[in-house]
Amino acid sequence: MSDPNALSLAAQSLHRNELSGAGLICAQVLEDEPENAGAWHLFGIIWARAGKLEQAKAHFETATRYAPENATYHYSLGLAWQSLAEHEQAASSYRDALARDATLHEARNNLGNLLKEQGALEESIECFRELVRQVPDSSPGHYNLGNLLHDAGKADDAIVHYQRAISVDPDNAAAFENLGRALAARGRLEEARNLWAGWLERDPENAVARHMLASAGGGNIPDRCDDQYVRDTFDAGFARNFDVQLARMDYKAPELVVEAVRAQGRNLAGVDVLDAGCGTGLCGPLIRPMAQRLAGVDLSEDMLVEARKLEVYDETIACELTAYMASHPTEFDLIISADTLCYFGKLEPVMRAACACLRSDGLFVFTVERMDSTGANMPYQLQQHGRYCHAEGYVVESLQESGLAVVELQRAELRRELGRTVEGLIVIAEPARNLAATNSNLANRKFSVSL
Image (cartoon, rainbow, N blue to C red; front, side):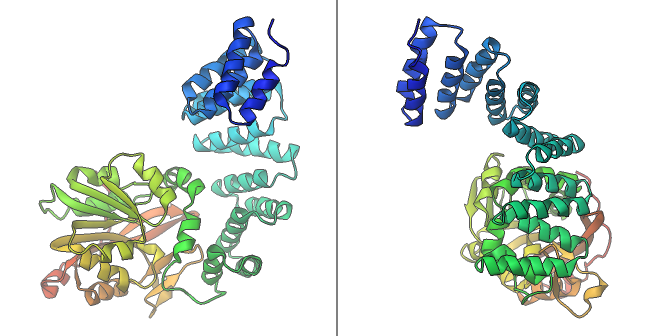
């Protein structure tokens, strides 16, 4: 029989991050008591702390076998499965935990997020509804439920839960941001302005609050999104779910950009390519077959973490793309930029940088959101969701003033957002050689996706 205090000593060693000592104690307990579920569970935590997730999972499975009614052991097993990206098994373990203890709120929260990632939106909503019923003062619970309801098209219900999340935790910045965006999307601009202004008063250096206040008509319109706004908006949490969110919006920009490149009929095999504003790397796998060298640049390091997982880029650089292109003259044959220049209002600086970065026979292919007739006589507008849209004429003028000639300009449906189609422009440009000839190729037709 092992020392009854042995596991307490092991836990104390673990608390001091003395993994080897804690492991030795657990091993001794299991030598004396091979079916000691507590020792198997604690040993699993030790393996998890050491980054050995497969071993951790195996130990948690053994713990649940010897103590099948212990909800915590099932919850730990769920965490291990989730860390291994085995989401079906993780969800099953979280359900097992909740079947044994319905008040294990961490398991319910994680299950709700997993269901969301798997596209089971209604089931995820019900999971978070139960969570906030059990824990009415859970700011993260109300925030997550608000996000799900917003994705389900229930904006008014989402607003209620964002407001509840803020009332419980006035420092919940994500809830502030999403509430403001939801209010603006519902046309409740005065409420949105008041919210952004109040948030900015509480936090005068907050780049998101400052930018979104301007987008709601409450401040000076900046020439482009502030660097810190971009970093804060495209943080780690956003980056991990970015591709899933875009899939729900029927997002087409990467395919449209790469198809536009292919349609030029040039020999682009083995060229040096820059993905300017690469984000999580949606263009990377599509353009890789053409590239001898493929570089991705993005302001958000968190987005680049996801892009690197694709293993298609030769290098990824965390840098503001205008500065990067300006500092790498005549380095690339092809620059692509899908759904990035919508974070720029004034285009001339980024166009000049692209022109400098291209070789003489290179191509610059990019998208912008197209401004409709309500923006007559304006080059661009900052929209209520925080992105810019541009007039077609201004796009052409900014290219020409920057030393680039328009090869082709086409209208396209980029995605669907809040129930409406977002119309954009697919623009192909090159270093200016014969403006008269190239401008005669301007087209104004729909552009189809066929890869």
